[in-house]
Amino acid sequence: MTKFSTPSADELPTTRQLNRATLFAAAAAAVILVTIVLPAEYGRDPTGIGKAFGLTPMGEMKRDEAIAPTAAARPTAEVAAAVPAVARGGPVEVRLTLQPDQGEEVKATMKAGEAFTYRWSTDGGAVNFELHGEPKEAVGNEYTSYEKGTSTGADGSFRAPFDGTHGWYWRNRSAKPVTITVTATGQFEKFALVE
Image (cartoon, rainbow, N blue to C red; front, side, top):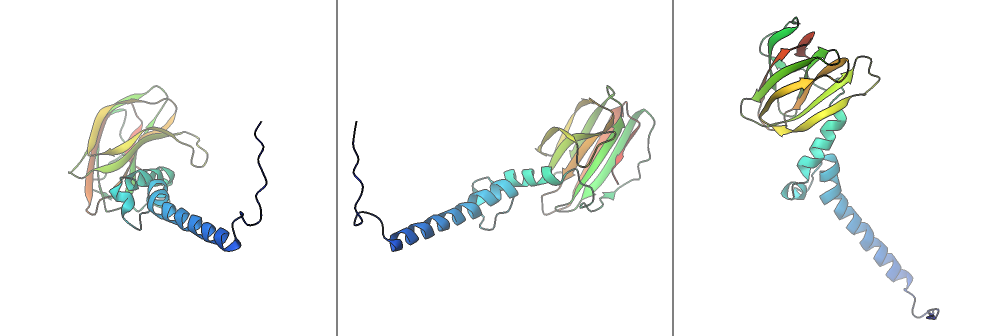
């Protein structure tokens, strides 16, 4: 077994050395916070380094996920044509224009097991999106996320796993307005912009 000796007082760091090491550690932590943590976790990039490393979009997506289901903080979208509630079957088309940093939702009211086919596209600019649903008697921010990402459009089919509203939340992160057109055909009570 190895025996270690206790260091003498001359071998221990001085108070000045300890203070210098503490200040260096605090400065390094601040640099890491500003250049990596804020862009990657919160979408805040005061130095621009996060964007250069591709961390800022990741943080923006996380921030959007946290605010997507809350309707109170979102401005109202411009709707090209009023879309009334439609009987089962469709097809229904909703067109909306999102200003820079604006988000909006289009939802279908469905029963468990009902399905629809869909297609959505933008007029050129990519938007952040999340396909999600809220149960009929959701409490607070209770929702289920099915798919999310950044795209200029998508098509496919969707089957409701529970009674409630199901649809998309889009956010325009570009500097120019983006128009989104979404069409749906299938089994739903209503397919419209969430107001």
